Image (cartoon, rainbow, N blue to C red; front, side, top):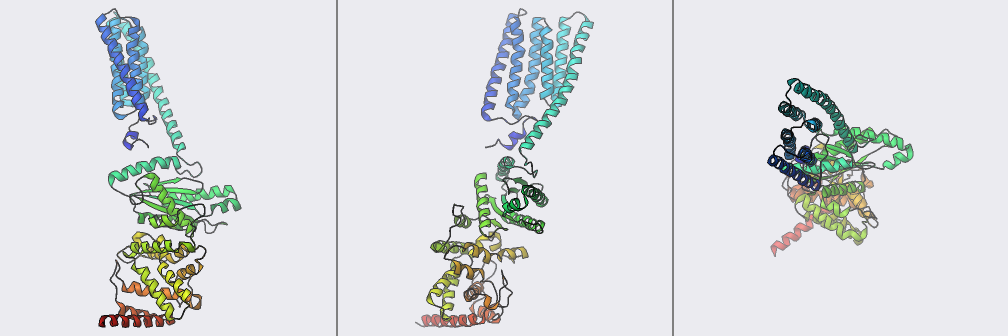
Length: 557
Protein backbone atom coordinates (compact mmCIF):
# COMPACT_ATOMS: atom_id res chain seq x y z
CA UNK A 1 0.00 0.00 0.00
CA UNK A 2 1.10 3.57 -0.63
CA UNK A 3 1.53 6.12 2.23
CA UNK A 4 -1.53 8.30 2.93
CA UNK A 5 -1.97 11.45 0.88
CA UNK A 6 -1.31 13.89 3.73
CA UNK A 7 1.91 12.11 4.61
CA UNK A 8 3.19 12.14 1.04
CA UNK A 9 2.43 15.84 0.65
CA UNK A 10 4.46 16.59 3.80
CA UNK A 11 7.78 15.60 2.28
CA UNK A 12 10.30 18.29 1.44
CA UNK A 13 10.54 19.06 -2.31
CA UNK A 14 12.74 16.61 -4.11
CA UNK A 15 12.80 14.17 -1.17
CA UNK A 16 11.01 10.90 -1.94
CA UNK A 17 8.73 9.26 0.66
CA UNK A 18 10.33 6.73 2.97
CA UNK A 19 9.09 3.42 4.25
CA UNK A 20 7.88 3.05 7.88
CA UNK A 21 10.86 0.84 8.77
CA UNK A 22 13.30 3.50 7.55
CA UNK A 23 11.40 6.20 9.43
CA UNK A 24 11.59 4.21 12.66
CA UNK A 25 15.32 3.59 12.28
CA UNK A 26 15.90 7.29 11.60
CA UNK A 27 14.05 8.28 14.76
CA UNK A 28 16.09 5.84 16.84
CA UNK A 29 19.37 7.15 15.35
CA UNK A 30 18.35 10.78 15.84
CA UNK A 31 17.49 10.11 19.47
CA UNK A 32 20.80 8.36 20.11
CA UNK A 33 22.89 11.15 18.59
CA UNK A 34 20.89 13.87 20.35
CA UNK A 35 21.27 12.05 23.65
CA UNK A 36 25.01 11.73 23.08
CA UNK A 37 25.26 15.47 22.41
CA UNK A 38 23.42 16.31 25.64
CA UNK A 39 25.66 13.97 27.66
CA UNK A 40 28.78 15.56 26.17
CA UNK A 41 27.52 19.06 26.99
CA UNK A 42 26.90 17.99 30.58
CA UNK A 43 30.42 16.53 30.71
CA UNK A 44 31.90 19.74 29.34
CA UNK A 45 30.00 21.82 31.90
CA UNK A 46 31.20 19.61 34.78
CA UNK A 47 34.87 19.80 33.70
CA UNK A 48 34.85 23.55 33.31
CA UNK A 49 37.28 25.07 30.86
CA UNK A 50 39.53 22.04 30.62
CA UNK A 51 37.56 20.23 27.90
CA UNK A 52 39.35 17.60 25.78
CA UNK A 53 39.50 18.34 22.05
CA UNK A 54 37.66 15.10 21.30
CA UNK A 55 34.68 16.26 23.33
CA UNK A 56 34.68 19.67 21.66
CA UNK A 57 34.44 18.01 18.24
CA UNK A 58 32.04 15.28 19.39
CA UNK A 59 29.33 17.67 20.60
CA UNK A 60 28.63 19.43 17.23
CA UNK A 61 29.25 16.18 15.36
CA UNK A 62 26.55 14.45 17.40
CA UNK A 63 24.18 17.37 16.77
CA UNK A 64 24.90 17.22 13.04
CA UNK A 65 24.32 13.46 12.88
CA UNK A 66 21.05 13.89 14.81
CA UNK A 67 19.95 16.49 12.24
CA UNK A 68 20.85 14.19 9.33
CA UNK A 69 18.92 11.30 10.89
CA UNK A 70 15.90 13.50 11.45
CA UNK A 71 16.04 14.64 7.83
CA UNK A 72 15.92 11.03 6.61
CA UNK A 73 12.70 10.64 8.59
CA UNK A 74 11.00 13.23 6.34
CA UNK A 75 7.77 13.67 8.28
CA UNK A 76 5.92 16.96 8.79
CA UNK A 77 6.30 16.98 12.58
CA UNK A 78 9.91 15.90 12.35
CA UNK A 79 10.63 18.55 9.70
CA UNK A 80 9.90 21.17 12.36
CA UNK A 81 12.09 19.26 14.80
CA UNK A 82 14.82 19.21 12.15
CA UNK A 83 14.97 23.01 12.01
CA UNK A 84 15.09 23.20 15.79
CA UNK A 85 17.84 20.56 15.88
CA UNK A 86 20.07 22.60 13.58
CA UNK A 87 19.50 25.72 15.68
CA UNK A 88 20.27 23.73 18.83
CA UNK A 89 23.41 22.43 17.13
CA UNK A 90 24.58 26.02 16.62
CA UNK A 91 24.03 26.81 20.27
CA UNK A 92 25.78 23.67 21.45
CA UNK A 93 28.78 24.37 19.20
CA UNK A 94 28.85 27.91 20.64
CA UNK A 95 28.77 26.64 24.21
CA UNK A 96 31.53 24.16 23.46
CA UNK A 97 33.77 26.79 21.88
CA UNK A 98 33.21 29.29 24.68
CA UNK A 99 34.23 26.63 27.20
CA UNK A 100 37.24 25.61 25.10
CA UNK A 101 38.34 29.14 24.22
CA UNK A 102 39.15 28.00 20.66
CA UNK A 103 37.54 29.07 17.39
CA UNK A 104 39.59 27.11 14.89
CA UNK A 105 37.29 24.07 14.73
CA UNK A 106 34.23 26.29 15.15
CA UNK A 107 34.64 28.06 11.82
CA UNK A 108 34.27 24.84 9.92
CA UNK A 109 31.35 23.58 12.01
CA UNK A 110 29.47 26.89 11.81
CA UNK A 111 29.91 26.94 8.05
CA UNK A 112 28.75 23.34 7.79
CA UNK A 113 25.55 24.01 9.80
CA UNK A 114 24.79 27.10 7.72
CA UNK A 115 25.35 25.43 4.35
CA UNK A 116 23.44 22.34 5.44
CA UNK A 117 20.46 24.57 6.24
CA UNK A 118 20.87 26.49 2.98
CA UNK A 119 20.53 23.31 0.94
CA UNK A 120 17.91 21.32 2.85
CA UNK A 121 15.68 23.95 4.50
CA UNK A 122 12.93 26.11 3.02
CA UNK A 123 14.26 29.58 2.27
CA UNK A 124 12.94 31.36 5.38
CA UNK A 125 14.25 28.71 7.77
CA UNK A 126 17.59 28.68 5.94
CA UNK A 127 17.96 32.47 6.30
CA UNK A 128 17.05 32.20 9.98
CA UNK A 129 19.63 29.46 10.54
CA UNK A 130 22.42 31.39 8.77
CA UNK A 131 21.55 34.49 10.81
CA UNK A 132 21.58 32.44 14.02
CA UNK A 133 24.92 30.92 13.09
CA UNK A 134 26.38 34.36 12.29
CA UNK A 135 25.22 35.83 15.60
CA UNK A 136 26.54 32.89 17.60
CA UNK A 137 29.89 33.00 15.81
CA UNK A 138 30.13 36.74 16.48
CA UNK A 139 29.51 36.09 20.17
CA UNK A 140 32.35 33.56 20.24
CA UNK A 141 34.71 35.97 18.47
CA UNK A 142 33.91 38.80 20.86
CA UNK A 143 34.52 36.50 23.83
CA UNK A 144 37.84 35.13 22.58
CA UNK A 145 39.40 38.10 20.78
CA UNK A 146 40.67 41.32 22.32
CA UNK A 147 40.89 43.25 19.05
CA UNK A 148 37.71 44.57 17.45
CA UNK A 149 39.44 44.57 14.08
CA UNK A 150 40.24 40.88 14.36
CA UNK A 151 36.62 40.16 15.30
CA UNK A 152 35.24 42.05 12.29
CA UNK A 153 37.80 40.51 9.92
CA UNK A 154 37.16 36.92 11.06
CA UNK A 155 33.41 37.37 11.12
CA UNK A 156 33.35 39.01 7.65
CA UNK A 157 35.60 36.32 6.20
CA UNK A 158 33.36 33.49 7.35
CA UNK A 159 30.13 35.22 6.29
CA UNK A 160 31.73 36.29 3.02
CA UNK A 161 32.27 32.64 2.19
CA UNK A 162 29.07 31.19 3.65
CA UNK A 163 26.55 33.58 2.07
CA UNK A 164 27.68 33.27 -1.61
CA UNK A 165 28.06 29.50 -1.26
CA UNK A 166 24.61 29.33 0.37
CA UNK A 167 23.11 31.22 -2.61
CA UNK A 168 24.88 28.84 -5.00
CA UNK A 169 23.55 25.86 -3.05
CA UNK A 170 20.00 27.22 -3.35
CA UNK A 171 20.42 27.36 -7.12
CA UNK A 172 21.83 23.82 -7.17
CA UNK A 173 19.01 22.65 -4.91
CA UNK A 174 16.42 24.08 -7.28
CA UNK A 175 18.03 22.27 -10.21
CA UNK A 176 18.23 19.00 -8.30
CA UNK A 177 14.63 19.33 -7.17
CA UNK A 178 13.48 19.97 -10.73
CA UNK A 179 15.56 17.04 -11.97
CA UNK A 180 14.05 14.73 -9.35
CA UNK A 181 10.57 15.89 -10.27
CA UNK A 182 11.27 15.44 -13.97
CA UNK A 183 12.65 11.95 -13.44
CA UNK A 184 9.74 11.06 -11.18
CA UNK A 185 7.23 12.34 -13.75
CA UNK A 186 9.03 10.53 -16.57
CA UNK A 187 8.80 7.30 -14.59
CA UNK A 188 5.02 7.84 -14.35
CA UNK A 189 4.44 8.84 -17.99
CA UNK A 190 3.93 6.72 -21.09
CA UNK A 191 6.61 7.98 -23.52
CA UNK A 192 4.47 7.50 -26.65
CA UNK A 193 1.13 9.05 -25.69
CA UNK A 194 2.31 11.26 -22.81
CA UNK A 195 -0.54 9.86 -20.74
CA UNK A 196 0.10 8.46 -17.29
CA UNK A 197 1.29 4.87 -17.15
CA UNK A 198 0.28 1.90 -14.98
CA UNK A 199 2.65 2.92 -12.17
CA UNK A 200 1.00 6.35 -11.93
CA UNK A 201 -2.47 4.80 -12.16
CA UNK A 202 -1.74 2.33 -9.35
CA UNK A 203 -0.65 5.19 -7.12
CA UNK A 204 -3.54 7.48 -8.01
CA UNK A 205 -6.32 4.94 -7.68
CA UNK A 206 -5.35 4.34 -4.04
CA UNK A 207 -5.39 8.09 -3.43
CA UNK A 208 -8.75 8.50 -5.18
CA UNK A 209 -10.27 5.58 -3.26
CA UNK A 210 -9.11 7.11 0.02
CA UNK A 211 -10.82 10.39 -0.90
CA UNK A 212 -13.97 8.56 -2.06
CA UNK A 213 -14.22 6.70 1.25
CA UNK A 214 -13.62 9.86 3.24
CA UNK A 215 -16.08 12.01 1.27
CA UNK A 216 -18.71 9.32 0.65
CA UNK A 217 -18.59 9.90 -3.11
CA UNK A 218 -18.42 7.37 -5.96
CA UNK A 219 -15.31 6.60 -7.97
CA UNK A 220 -15.71 4.93 -11.34
CA UNK A 221 -13.05 2.98 -13.21
CA UNK A 222 -13.38 2.73 -17.00
CA UNK A 223 -11.11 0.23 -18.77
CA UNK A 224 -11.03 0.61 -22.56
CA UNK A 225 -9.40 -1.54 -25.22
CA UNK A 226 -9.08 -0.88 -28.95
CA UNK A 227 -10.91 -3.48 -31.04
CA UNK A 228 -8.78 -5.62 -33.40
CA UNK A 229 -5.87 -3.18 -33.07
CA UNK A 230 -3.54 -5.94 -34.24
CA UNK A 231 -4.91 -5.44 -37.76
CA UNK A 232 -3.57 -1.86 -37.77
CA UNK A 233 -0.05 -3.02 -36.94
CA UNK A 234 -0.22 -5.99 -39.32
CA UNK A 235 -1.60 -4.10 -42.31
CA UNK A 236 -0.16 -0.59 -41.88
CA UNK A 237 2.94 -1.18 -39.74
CA UNK A 238 3.85 -0.39 -36.17
CA UNK A 239 4.61 3.26 -36.87
CA UNK A 240 1.07 3.74 -38.11
CA UNK A 241 -0.11 1.93 -34.99
CA UNK A 242 1.90 4.31 -32.81
CA UNK A 243 0.41 7.33 -34.59
CA UNK A 244 -3.05 5.89 -34.04
CA UNK A 245 -2.38 5.49 -30.32
CA UNK A 246 -1.31 9.13 -30.09
CA UNK A 247 -4.59 10.15 -31.77
CA UNK A 248 -6.51 7.96 -29.33
CA UNK A 249 -4.78 9.69 -26.40
CA UNK A 250 -5.74 13.12 -27.78
CA UNK A 251 -9.40 12.06 -28.07
CA UNK A 252 -9.46 10.72 -24.52
CA UNK A 253 -7.89 13.93 -23.20
CA UNK A 254 -10.33 16.04 -25.17
CA UNK A 255 -13.36 14.27 -23.71
CA UNK A 256 -12.03 13.88 -20.17
CA UNK A 257 -12.50 16.31 -17.29
CA UNK A 258 -9.64 18.07 -15.51
CA UNK A 259 -10.21 15.88 -12.44
CA UNK A 260 -10.09 12.62 -14.40
CA UNK A 261 -7.01 10.41 -14.59
CA UNK A 262 -6.28 8.92 -18.02
CA UNK A 263 -3.57 6.29 -18.33
CA UNK A 264 -2.24 3.93 -20.95
CA UNK A 265 -2.04 0.64 -19.07
CA UNK A 266 -1.18 -1.75 -21.90
CA UNK A 267 -0.38 -1.92 -25.59
CA UNK A 268 -3.86 -0.81 -26.71
CA UNK A 269 -5.51 -0.66 -23.27
CA UNK A 270 -6.41 2.58 -21.52
CA UNK A 271 -7.81 3.11 -18.03
CA UNK A 272 -9.69 6.14 -16.74
CA UNK A 273 -10.50 7.16 -13.17
CA UNK A 274 -13.60 9.33 -12.91
CA UNK A 275 -13.91 10.71 -9.34
CA UNK A 276 -17.42 11.68 -8.29
CA UNK A 277 -19.05 10.02 -11.33
CA UNK A 278 -21.84 7.48 -10.96
CA UNK A 279 -21.89 4.39 -13.15
CA UNK A 280 -24.49 6.02 -15.41
CA UNK A 281 -22.47 9.23 -15.79
CA UNK A 282 -19.38 7.16 -16.53
CA UNK A 283 -21.34 5.16 -19.11
CA UNK A 284 -22.36 8.37 -20.86
CA UNK A 285 -18.74 9.58 -20.83
CA UNK A 286 -17.56 6.25 -22.25
CA UNK A 287 -20.21 6.42 -24.97
CA UNK A 288 -19.05 9.91 -25.97
CA UNK A 289 -15.48 8.68 -26.21
CA UNK A 290 -16.53 5.57 -28.10
CA UNK A 291 -18.55 7.60 -30.62
CA UNK A 292 -15.74 10.14 -31.03
CA UNK A 293 -13.27 7.31 -31.62
CA UNK A 294 -15.47 5.67 -34.24
CA UNK A 295 -15.91 9.00 -36.07
CA UNK A 296 -12.19 9.86 -35.89
CA UNK A 297 -11.07 6.59 -37.48
CA UNK A 298 -14.06 5.91 -39.78
CA UNK A 299 -12.16 7.02 -42.89
CA UNK A 300 -8.89 5.25 -42.08
CA UNK A 301 -7.69 2.24 -44.09
CA UNK A 302 -8.26 0.16 -40.94
CA UNK A 303 -11.11 1.73 -38.90
CA UNK A 304 -10.66 1.56 -35.14
CA UNK A 305 -13.38 1.16 -32.53
CA UNK A 306 -13.27 1.08 -28.74
CA UNK A 307 -14.80 -1.26 -26.16
CA UNK A 308 -15.22 -0.15 -22.53
CA UNK A 309 -15.83 -1.91 -19.23
CA UNK A 310 -17.15 0.15 -16.31
CA UNK A 311 -17.07 -0.51 -12.55
CA UNK A 312 -18.04 1.85 -9.74
CA UNK A 313 -16.90 2.11 -6.12
CA UNK A 314 -18.38 1.04 -3.75
CA UNK A 315 -21.05 -1.03 -5.56
CA UNK A 316 -18.69 -3.12 -7.69
CA UNK A 317 -15.70 -3.44 -5.40
CA UNK A 318 -14.27 -2.05 -2.13
CA UNK A 319 -10.60 -2.11 -3.18
CA UNK A 320 -8.63 -0.99 -6.20
CA UNK A 321 -7.77 -4.56 -7.23
CA UNK A 322 -11.39 -5.75 -7.11
CA UNK A 323 -12.63 -2.59 -8.83
CA UNK A 324 -10.22 -2.96 -11.75
CA UNK A 325 -11.00 -6.68 -11.99
CA UNK A 326 -14.73 -5.87 -12.20
CA UNK A 327 -14.08 -3.32 -14.96
CA UNK A 328 -11.96 -5.91 -16.78
CA UNK A 329 -14.81 -8.43 -16.62
CA UNK A 330 -17.21 -5.84 -18.02
CA UNK A 331 -14.70 -5.11 -20.80
CA UNK A 332 -14.45 -8.81 -21.58
CA UNK A 333 -18.24 -8.91 -21.87
CA UNK A 334 -18.19 -5.89 -24.21
CA UNK A 335 -15.71 -7.76 -26.43
CA UNK A 336 -17.76 -10.96 -26.33
CA UNK A 337 -20.96 -9.08 -27.17
CA UNK A 338 -19.66 -7.73 -30.45
CA UNK A 339 -17.17 -4.98 -29.48
CA UNK A 340 -17.59 -1.23 -30.04
CA UNK A 341 -19.76 -0.85 -26.95
CA UNK A 342 -19.60 0.07 -23.26
CA UNK A 343 -20.78 -2.38 -20.60
CA UNK A 344 -21.34 -1.70 -16.88
CA UNK A 345 -20.29 -4.51 -14.57
CA UNK A 346 -22.93 -6.65 -12.91
CA UNK A 347 -22.83 -10.09 -11.34
CA UNK A 348 -24.71 -11.69 -14.23
CA UNK A 349 -22.01 -10.50 -16.62
CA UNK A 350 -19.34 -11.94 -14.37
CA UNK A 351 -21.11 -15.32 -14.30
CA UNK A 352 -21.62 -15.62 -18.05
CA UNK A 353 -18.57 -13.90 -19.48
CA UNK A 354 -15.82 -14.92 -17.07
CA UNK A 355 -12.62 -15.19 -19.16
CA UNK A 356 -11.26 -18.68 -19.61
CA UNK A 357 -9.24 -20.63 -22.13
CA UNK A 358 -12.27 -21.54 -24.21
CA UNK A 359 -14.08 -18.23 -24.18
CA UNK A 360 -17.66 -18.20 -22.90
CA UNK A 361 -18.20 -21.79 -23.90
CA UNK A 362 -22.01 -21.45 -23.87
CA UNK A 363 -23.88 -24.11 -25.83
CA UNK A 364 -27.06 -26.19 -25.65
CA UNK A 365 -25.87 -27.82 -22.42
CA UNK A 366 -26.09 -24.44 -20.66
CA UNK A 367 -29.83 -23.90 -21.20
CA UNK A 368 -30.64 -24.25 -17.49
CA UNK A 369 -27.93 -21.72 -16.60
CA UNK A 370 -29.28 -19.30 -19.21
CA UNK A 371 -32.83 -19.67 -17.90
CA UNK A 372 -31.67 -18.88 -14.36
CA UNK A 373 -29.85 -15.85 -15.72
CA UNK A 374 -33.03 -14.72 -17.50
CA UNK A 375 -34.93 -14.93 -14.19
CA UNK A 376 -32.26 -12.83 -12.45
CA UNK A 377 -32.43 -10.22 -15.20
CA UNK A 378 -36.21 -10.07 -14.86
CA UNK A 379 -35.85 -9.30 -11.17
CA UNK A 380 -33.30 -6.58 -12.01
CA UNK A 381 -35.56 -5.10 -14.70
CA UNK A 382 -39.09 -5.46 -13.35
CA UNK A 383 -38.64 -6.59 -9.75
CA UNK A 384 -40.15 -10.00 -10.54
CA UNK A 385 -39.16 -13.11 -12.50
CA UNK A 386 -42.69 -13.53 -13.97
CA UNK A 387 -42.24 -11.51 -17.17
CA UNK A 388 -40.05 -13.90 -19.15
CA UNK A 389 -41.76 -16.98 -17.73
CA UNK A 390 -45.16 -15.59 -18.78
CA UNK A 391 -43.88 -14.66 -22.25
CA UNK A 392 -42.54 -18.21 -22.65
CA UNK A 393 -45.91 -19.77 -21.74
CA UNK A 394 -47.83 -17.44 -24.04
CA UNK A 395 -45.41 -18.23 -26.90
CA UNK A 396 -46.03 -21.97 -26.53
CA UNK A 397 -49.83 -21.42 -26.51
CA UNK A 398 -49.73 -19.26 -29.64
CA UNK A 399 -47.45 -21.78 -31.37
CA UNK A 400 -49.84 -24.63 -30.56
CA UNK A 401 -52.76 -22.54 -31.84
CA UNK A 402 -50.86 -22.02 -35.12
CA UNK A 403 -50.19 -25.76 -35.39
CA UNK A 404 -46.39 -25.69 -35.05
CA UNK A 405 -44.72 -29.08 -34.37
CA UNK A 406 -44.34 -29.99 -30.66
CA UNK A 407 -40.54 -29.79 -30.72
CA UNK A 408 -40.71 -26.24 -32.12
CA UNK A 409 -43.34 -25.32 -29.54
CA UNK A 410 -40.99 -26.49 -26.80
CA UNK A 411 -38.03 -24.59 -28.26
CA UNK A 412 -40.14 -21.47 -28.71
CA UNK A 413 -41.11 -21.50 -25.04
CA UNK A 414 -37.41 -21.52 -24.17
CA UNK A 415 -36.78 -18.66 -26.61
CA UNK A 416 -39.65 -16.71 -25.04
CA UNK A 417 -38.06 -17.05 -21.63
CA UNK A 418 -34.70 -15.93 -23.06
CA UNK A 419 -35.97 -13.11 -25.28
CA UNK A 420 -34.69 -10.33 -22.95
CA UNK A 421 -31.39 -11.94 -22.00
CA UNK A 422 -29.62 -9.24 -24.00
CA UNK A 423 -30.57 -6.74 -21.29
CA UNK A 424 -27.52 -8.05 -19.49
CA UNK A 425 -25.66 -5.32 -21.40
CA UNK A 426 -28.08 -2.46 -20.58
CA UNK A 427 -27.26 -0.30 -17.52
CA UNK A 428 -29.42 -0.71 -14.41
CA UNK A 429 -30.03 3.04 -14.33
CA UNK A 430 -31.73 2.80 -17.74
CA UNK A 431 -33.76 -0.34 -17.03
CA UNK A 432 -34.98 0.98 -13.68
CA UNK A 433 -35.53 4.61 -14.68
CA UNK A 434 -38.94 5.73 -13.39
CA UNK A 435 -39.48 8.36 -16.08
CA UNK A 436 -39.42 8.43 -19.86
CA UNK A 437 -36.18 7.39 -21.57
CA UNK A 438 -34.13 9.86 -23.56
CA UNK A 439 -32.87 9.22 -27.07
CA UNK A 440 -29.50 7.89 -25.88
CA UNK A 441 -31.13 5.66 -23.27
CA UNK A 442 -33.61 4.32 -25.79
CA UNK A 443 -30.72 3.52 -28.12
CA UNK A 444 -29.11 1.55 -25.30
CA UNK A 445 -32.28 -0.47 -24.73
CA UNK A 446 -32.55 -1.20 -28.45
CA UNK A 447 -29.19 -2.97 -28.39
CA UNK A 448 -30.58 -5.86 -26.33
CA UNK A 449 -31.73 -8.08 -29.26
CA UNK A 450 -28.20 -8.01 -30.73
CA UNK A 451 -26.62 -8.58 -27.34
CA UNK A 452 -29.02 -11.44 -26.72
CA UNK A 453 -27.99 -12.99 -30.03
CA UNK A 454 -24.34 -12.75 -28.99
CA UNK A 455 -25.10 -14.44 -25.67
CA UNK A 456 -26.79 -17.28 -27.58
CA UNK A 457 -23.99 -17.67 -30.12
CA UNK A 458 -22.94 -21.18 -28.99
CA UNK A 459 -23.43 -24.53 -30.68
CA UNK A 460 -26.96 -25.92 -30.53
CA UNK A 461 -28.51 -22.49 -29.88
CA UNK A 462 -28.70 -21.29 -33.48
CA UNK A 463 -32.50 -21.36 -33.69
CA UNK A 464 -32.95 -19.51 -30.39
CA UNK A 465 -30.36 -16.99 -31.44
CA UNK A 466 -32.17 -16.07 -34.66
CA UNK A 467 -35.56 -15.76 -32.96
CA UNK A 468 -34.28 -13.61 -30.10
CA UNK A 469 -32.34 -11.36 -32.49
CA UNK A 470 -35.49 -10.65 -34.56
CA UNK A 471 -38.19 -10.37 -31.89
CA UNK A 472 -38.33 -6.55 -32.20
CA UNK A 473 -38.53 -6.54 -36.01
CA UNK A 474 -41.86 -5.48 -37.55
CA UNK A 475 -43.80 -6.67 -40.62
CA UNK A 476 -43.79 -3.09 -41.94
CA UNK A 477 -39.97 -2.96 -41.78
CA UNK A 478 -39.83 -0.28 -39.04
CA UNK A 479 -38.44 -2.53 -36.31
CA UNK A 480 -34.92 -3.07 -35.07
CA UNK A 481 -32.08 -3.96 -35.12
CA UNK A 482 -31.94 -4.94 -38.83
CA UNK A 483 -35.14 -3.37 -40.19
CA UNK A 484 -36.45 -6.71 -41.50
CA UNK A 485 -39.98 -6.94 -42.84
CA UNK A 486 -42.66 -9.43 -43.88
CA UNK A 487 -41.43 -12.97 -44.50
CA UNK A 488 -37.85 -12.01 -43.62
CA UNK A 489 -38.87 -12.28 -39.97
CA UNK A 490 -39.14 -15.85 -38.59
CA UNK A 491 -42.66 -16.76 -37.43
CA UNK A 492 -41.19 -17.64 -34.02
CA UNK A 493 -39.83 -14.10 -33.64
CA UNK A 494 -43.24 -12.70 -34.56
CA UNK A 495 -44.84 -14.86 -31.88
CA UNK A 496 -42.37 -13.65 -29.24
CA UNK A 497 -43.07 -10.04 -30.25
CA UNK A 498 -46.81 -10.39 -29.62
CA UNK A 499 -46.45 -12.30 -26.33
CA UNK A 500 -43.82 -9.82 -25.09
CA UNK A 501 -45.94 -6.77 -25.97
CA UNK A 502 -49.07 -8.16 -24.32
CA UNK A 503 -47.28 -9.10 -21.10
CA UNK A 504 -45.47 -5.72 -20.99
CA UNK A 505 -48.72 -3.79 -21.45
CA UNK A 506 -50.66 -5.70 -18.79
CA UNK A 507 -47.95 -5.89 -16.10
CA UNK A 508 -47.23 -3.12 -13.62
CA UNK A 509 -43.80 -1.52 -14.08
CA UNK A 510 -41.81 0.95 -12.01
CA UNK A 511 -42.63 3.76 -14.48
CA UNK A 512 -46.38 2.95 -15.06
CA UNK A 513 -49.27 0.70 -14.14
CA UNK A 514 -50.53 -2.05 -16.45
CA UNK A 515 -53.38 -1.11 -18.80
CA UNK A 516 -55.38 -4.34 -18.41
CA UNK A 517 -56.17 -7.19 -20.77
CA UNK A 518 -59.04 -5.50 -22.62
CA UNK A 519 -57.05 -2.35 -23.46
CA UNK A 520 -54.04 -4.47 -24.45
CA UNK A 521 -56.24 -6.47 -26.86
CA UNK A 522 -57.43 -3.27 -28.49
CA UNK A 523 -53.84 -2.06 -28.92
CA UNK A 524 -52.66 -5.35 -30.42
CA UNK A 525 -55.56 -5.43 -32.91
CA UNK A 526 -54.87 -1.81 -33.85
CA UNK A 527 -51.25 -2.66 -34.71
CA UNK A 528 -52.00 -5.91 -36.57
CA UNK A 529 -50.33 -5.91 -39.98
CA UNK A 530 -47.91 -3.10 -39.10
CA UNK A 531 -46.12 -3.72 -35.82
CA UNK A 532 -47.40 -7.29 -35.40
CA UNK A 533 -48.13 -10.16 -37.76
CA UNK A 534 -51.91 -10.35 -38.37
CA UNK A 535 -51.98 -14.18 -38.37
CA UNK A 536 -50.18 -14.30 -35.01
CA UNK A 537 -52.56 -11.68 -33.57
CA UNK A 538 -55.57 -13.75 -34.65
CA UNK A 539 -54.11 -16.86 -33.03
CA UNK A 540 -53.35 -14.95 -29.85
CA UNK A 541 -56.90 -13.59 -29.65
CA UNK A 542 -58.13 -17.17 -29.78
CA UNK A 543 -55.70 -18.11 -27.00
CA UNK A 544 -56.92 -15.23 -24.83
CA UNK A 545 -60.55 -16.20 -25.46
CA UNK A 546 -59.78 -19.73 -24.33
CA UNK A 547 -57.98 -18.49 -21.22
CA UNK A 548 -60.94 -16.28 -20.32
CA UNK A 549 -63.39 -19.19 -20.73
CA UNK A 550 -61.22 -21.37 -18.51
CA UNK A 551 -61.03 -18.59 -15.92
CA UNK A 552 -64.83 -18.15 -15.93
CA UNK A 553 -65.30 -21.90 -15.64
CA UNK A 554 -63.05 -22.04 -12.59
CA UNK A 555 -65.00 -19.18 -11.00
CA UNK A 556 -68.30 -20.96 -11.66
CA UNK A 557 -67.04 -24.06 -9.88
